Image 1 (spheres, rainbow, N blue to C red):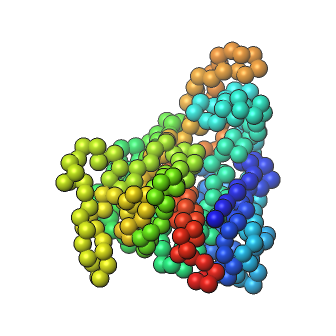
Image 2: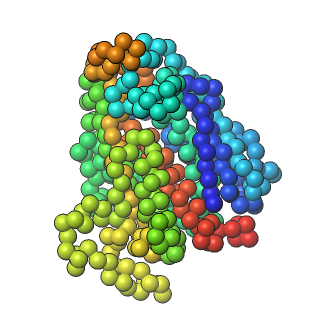
Image 3: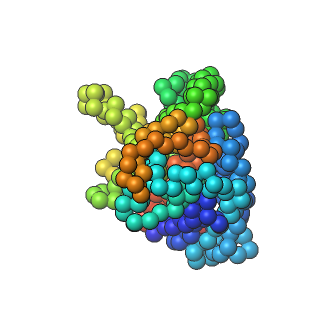
Length: 356
């Protein structure tokens, strides 16, 4: 019921999104959306790309006098600092672990300027749509928070972070709630940046205040939709919910979440299920983690193929690239979780025009 269609290419005129299915009456302003876009904006720290985009959003439709109309919400962000010149020399040479080769094979042609639609710049539209979803969820007291929990083997210490720390994590360059780990993460990123390389990591997203009952029991399970949405982000190569892959080494008695009564409501003593059981939310915080790959655009020479000559060759990638995608992907993953939760909240009747 809640749908987002992104548009635009990395070095084209603009990027943006059309959001459909948002009920009428929701208070929404460009400032609400801008707040989220500022968190993924490039050029803010040493650990991100030097591309200097303001990412100023314009709401073109669907909002009147500060409230949504129930009609499609179109939002656009104009590309101001595009520089496709660095890609001219490699237009016929697919970059390793990018979508260059697969796009060419599928469509027969592609926008070679920075990856076109396969660029991380496409996520501007996702974050803008997620801002609308977050505003919608807030009417039910639902909050979506993301933070970095690992960068190239440097992990947070769980006893040093709490929910308030996660809420403040966006103020840190690496988006980490553990100050000690954050410092070591930054050092790791900058160390490999100097070597012309990149690193990956893990982002955790927590959704608080989600009521029991979101999700469908079979094919549209809430965890399945969340995993699909998060995996649709280009740099994500794995998703786990709750205890995730850790359940494989546990006994049932260790992994089961016993039921308790807390503040007059049924909850669980532990949350190994990550807030979802049988594909349906159970009222506990929803917790998922995503594995983010190292940025494939690196300065080191790599092997590739010249598509015109059909010869093996060496590729050297220039331009402005993140040495670590993790810090800037945090708001993107928050947005994807918010979009899924908003959709299921609408489908389940938890949110509607009469409740705004």
